[in-house]
Image 1: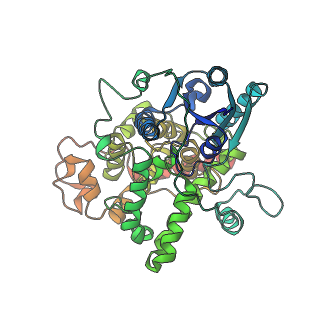
Image 2: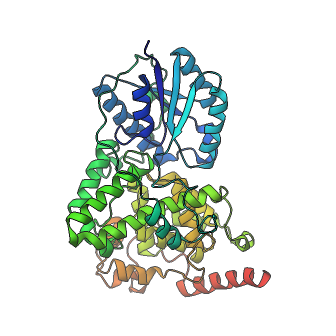
Image 3: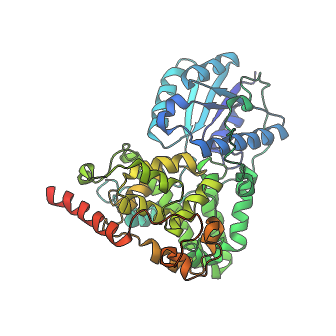
Length: 469
């Protein structure tokens, strides 16, 4: 008698290169289940932009399953109640899932294993990262604290296996619907602040593959040189697809290496891109060994940093109304598209933390709510890097000058003009410092702070915690 097997979808919303799904399909008739358990995730439940993406990604995943004769069973609530209920209702003999490398998710896996111990087999597979954090250790068997040695070690010993080809046909068990996706109200309404998102994104496994191929057609050849130019399409834009598991890191790794091997001109860009992919793994690596990273600075001296909490300054930053064009362009791009160019992310983060002296956690929470690629590990590790309090961090005295950054990476103001229409009529020179014009551009705000004064204030604040150490 053929048995029923459950694949519990999590951050692996794809059919290809999905170890847990592949094993489950070989073990019996498939039941494909997705559970939205916001209580288990706590404050790390999906933010607004992520909820928009999740709705569309689940829609695409269900369509892919339907094309093979299956259906995605949706349930919202307590995983520890829902999963055993589905096991009992369909007499499932096995449950398979892929690990989610976030502290709350790993704890949930342990609870599920205990809950199902007397009912069925429960197996967790690896599919989210290039390498399991437990495997990449230094010569003393200890975790790395600096990226470059970690990167070299991973390249030497932990390159992921080549992903298998497209999945074969699945055999499904008929299921009774539990929840309707529209009933989850993941999409914003009144107002629909995500109304422009569809112009920029195509969630789902097919959209991920299309983004990868577009990257290989052109941007990868210039990635090393143009990834810092926000007005150019020089990046892969794969980050939200990776976060939701619509494509695997292993698939991207091997596909990029194949491009490097076949087109020698792309070596520099391809290698720079792979290094960024490993940085994603390193962020999860840090989170694995420092589970408090989203809340507490990794460098303990920063616990007493003299932040100057100011809700008005935080709001002007969130609204893109700081008076610094590159900063404001980035924050408005974020609000309108759910994404921001990586170079600009560093500039706006540095501005919030060092120019405005607002706690880095405030910026991290805002990004987590507004980014379609909001990723707990990357988000917290990157904010700590900018704030100077993380592992392998940018030193505190490295304070991005938003004027020089603008002049260097957006010299003609093309990026600024796209997102800050009040400045669209200015030329390339004046657009970086509109406060120098005889008359302020219509409706554009004055500077929230003066760069030189803010820089000195930041240095003085850092000196205060150094003196107290």
